[in-house]
Image 1: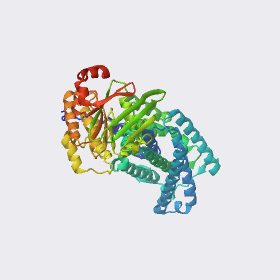
Image 2: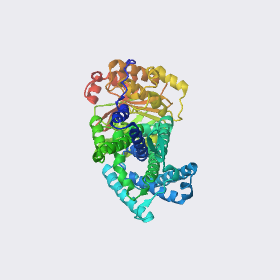
Image 3: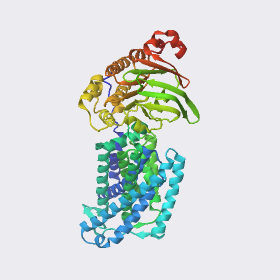
Amino acid sequence: MSETTPRPPRDWAPWLVLPAVLLVTLPLMSFSTWITLTVAGAAMGMMLFLMASGLTLVFGLMDVLNFAHGAFVTVGAYIAVSVLGRLTGWAGSDSVLLNLAALGIAVLSGAIATGGVGWFVERTIIRRVYGSHLQQILITMGGLIVTAQIVIALWGAQPLLVPKPAMLRGSLLLGASAIESYRLVAVALGLLLYAAVHTVLNRTRIGLLVRAGVENREMVEAMGFRIHRLFIGVFVAGAALAGIGGVMWGVYQEIVTATIGDEMTVLIFIVVIIGGLGSITGCFQAAILVGLTANYVGYLTPKLALGSNIALMVIILLWRPRGLFPVAKQ
Amino acid sequence: MPEPLLDLAGVHTHIGRYHILHGVDLAVPEGGVTMLLGRNGAGKTTTLRTIMGLWRASAGRIRFDGADITAAATPDIARRGIAYVPEAMGIFTGLTVRENMLLAATTGRFDVARLDAVFALFPVLKVKWHDAAGGLSGGQKQMLAISRAIVEERRLLIIDEPTKGLAPAVIAHLIDGLAALKETRTTILLVEQNFHMARSLGDTVAVMDDGRVVHTGAMAALAADEALQSRLLGLSLAAHQ
């Protein structure tokens, strides 16, 4: 009996990518600039993680190519406009607590609204195209366009300003580095939600089922679990997370348009592909990597900034064709 | 004669435009091991998958414990007490051995006495309890797949070619484990090409060819009749070892 089967060596290489990027860029700029850019990149990464985390699970677990995922980001951003527009007293107050409460209500509202939209979309559209990638691409691309038109019908075609909470506009000085308060809030919220998603996936029975379902849906069903109910739950949770990402991104940009989600779709897919399908940890690390790359390259060689994340994806895929931490077998 | 635990009557299955099962009749008596034999492509795996609802029967009837499960959803079939070990084993390689077993425990908790019995059958799983299942050897994965199926009491175990691709020493250990399981009067429907396993475990046998059951009877009778083996399987069972 082969009880002494050697354990395969743990693959540490993907874990070294993020520290390597941090270390390689440090000598290329002053320390204070590096700190500022790193926090900015991490904040952008956290917001990207929120937007992309649902997509990677939906992709991995349900094998659904949802090109309409950006629509949840758009809805979330517009919910931020509406909620913060009604809470101008709290958002404009000098009290950090009231500012955070206003932002918290916007985040919660965005999550509930997009979760509801996600449930409706899964029940009416997605469930009809399970198993057909071509139909999924066509119908979800159409969904993205329709959503943009609905948003224009409800909120108008003009770009709308988002009232960023007053005390989150300023910067904190950390030595010689200026760090925008809002970015710290984004980093904190991103870490909190990553920890929550990670805990649910790794410490609960539902999480166990999701992880198993990502690997082998059929076997989960053969063990007596109705995987479609799990699909709906994951889709709704993914939509809610994207909505939260949309709220945070909208407030960060301070202006929203009906195409804000479309504009993020390419970056969201880059994060999902770099991270590896179905992996929350991969998505988290890839999102930070993309955020950091955008900020570092934007500072060091602005002309390359636009293509930097595409180049990053190409490099990662040449090295790891299935992404950094692939889980799903599709 | 008691009613069989599982009964297939005239079952047809189409996969896409291919007609795979052409009226399968199969009875699995309670408390014994039924071997399902046949050449490659005879329809054995399709029969098991059709029983589990993973492929739909296009005609015919499947009854389990007196209830019609022909059109039932796979999770409902499993919840009636049928555990399925597919040919590819269906191990979740990203989960630990413990997590794989925990998923199979419908209450989300282990019955400690039952778990000890599983460890007695396959002690290696206790050693590897917190290791990723993806790191197990082929034989260990098969033991995990079977252990997962028996971590709770089941009415019926459906196992598809458990010895495929395994080393002889591992197969011998697996046979010992299944023999111990047979002692508990667990009903097993087993697809297997390994003659030694078929002869030592099987009580009854059904032989399939071209999507139909062409022979049923006692395993011992088939094992003793080389001419019948040659006619049904194309060569003697001994050559399958």
